[in-house]
Image (cartoon, rainbow, N blue to C red; front, side, top):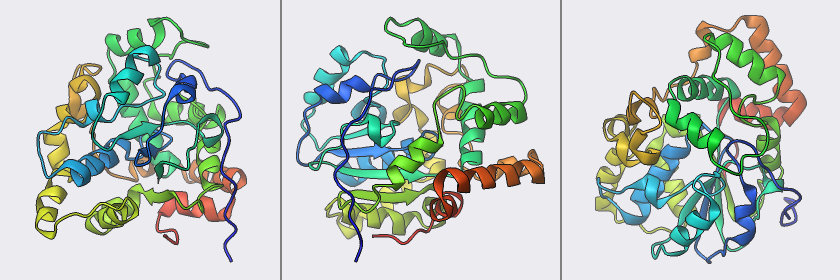
Length: 303
């Protein structure tokens, strides 16, 4: 028999240049809310696009970034963000990048957690960070209320970026291992579904049907071809302004740089065998063998 863990309770607040976790303390859950959780750069925006199309589609004009905010991002402040979310009349779907122990986890909501190999996360994050413009730094570093140091300009070398991320656990963003570990520890809860970036790439139709079943969304069979088209990576990249925050204003190259390549394994061209072995050993030490295997490969035993 599976041992279902107890409902998580919030243990701490989490603040940095990006986060204000206190917003969850003031958030009023509805019985049908959906929360998308990830570390970051693991397929979050992609999953939000899927949810928008499953709930409200097929519709190529859905403004997903406006409909599904990152709730614990500290800009705009919670005094602005909460009334906007509370005014929504559709079934709400929100995102968080918090570890479970800094989140208010509600039995009312349904949660989807997305995993991705940490090396792929870093390569995607580097593209996100290296292409960010002055407006991005100004919003994160200069908006009142920042706790802790500002976020820095990244080094020119992605290998150095990876080394700093490894040596300082997620630097310059936030800790990686605790995020994955805290969600993995509650994976047997009945209102939590685990998905993986690699599985989405392998079988998008099958994974989207699994998500729809978990969320009790009845999708007419005739709608599936259009829904799948609007959730394809190529379509999202061509129409990136609809799903990227502020239409991509934080990146001089525009929204398409946020929806980058959508591929795994780019690190294989850069990292040495020793560096890969170091990462893999660290993953097992931090997460345990089962979780480390899932994070690297996907295809865990699914509910």
